[in-house]
Image (spheres, rainbow over the protein chains, first blue to last red):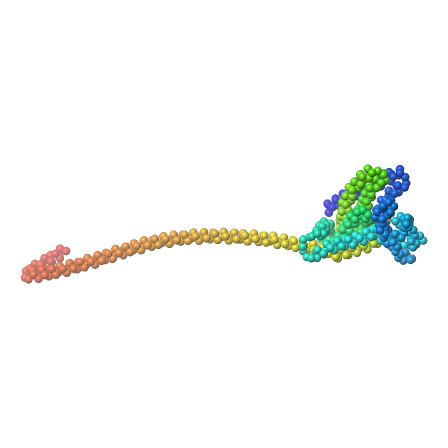
Length: 344
Length: 164
């Protein structure tokens, strides 16, 4: 348990450095473009934000003034008028200016009501579409892999031999070491979590794809599920440790109690922020470097920037793997602490 | 700071989607995969164990064979040795027996010869005595026609007897 902690602290350092770097990169972008005027500065950050935030349509490429986009359904749950469904392409006119549809307007990626109606945005956004794709792909891949195992004992073959070491790694090095003999009950969650994060981290790196795991709503959901599983499975020893920490002088116990109760919530929050920050930061770094050539309007910077962004992208692939590992590792550590019977 | 504000729509979809994925994969993928992995690991483990056992048994068998062979060899050697001893003893015994028999036969022969000699001598003695008697009778018949001669002879004989 010590060793992975060491590794993860290193990983955290790397992600922190990357985040810092990305912020400074963004500032540079702003600073350098300030001299060129307000318009370009806004264009620089918009270009990055457009890539890392969610959208109501799937923008693939812009050729000249033509936007190649896949329209996605915009689903609005109006508290008074019920569900309204329109395609995202309906919200813009021929010149790409936002227009009102059914009392709603879509501006700067946000839906708002023109008559101040209360509503909930349940659109199949780019991220939701990506989520559905990843669910379908993951299901197909692993049900295919599972078919081989149903045929009885045989040597791994094809796609199975690619995934089997990863599954065994999650089982032996993440679940078994951190949860102990009760690991089997949590295996479905940990495996789903690991492959969901890994697949979407990698998918997020491909051009044109959505940035699902760099979205706080997604990481929040995943952290929330870990939080629920941890506390629902909390044994007596776990709650004793939080509420009335044994082996601590009596006057200190109330202080520890406060710290421990905060700790229950900081654990999932750290999970949520870590994944969100490292993936978003990585994307911002790559986009900043790519954007540098356009902002400075220099071919040389563009060439160097492209080469450098390739290096960063390779690091991003590693980060994608590491973050999937770290999220699963910490989830299993929290679960392991909760289900421990307390034989220290 | 739009980035840090979660969209409720995506939150709901993510929660529902992930739970669906969890159930689908849990039921149709992870369960058979983990069961299959476990089964395979157990099979490999038991196969390895069986192989190890077979190897040990083989070794034990080989050692047994070696031992048996050694014993057989030792037994053969001892039997041979014993047979040789027995043979030589028999030879020795036969020799002594033969010499004994020979000696006895010689002795017997000697005794027979001695007896035959004695018998022959007795026969000769008897013959001589008879002949002597016959001669003596004849002589006496002739000589002892008169009384004096007879008396003279008897005296002579008595004299001889006394001397003996």
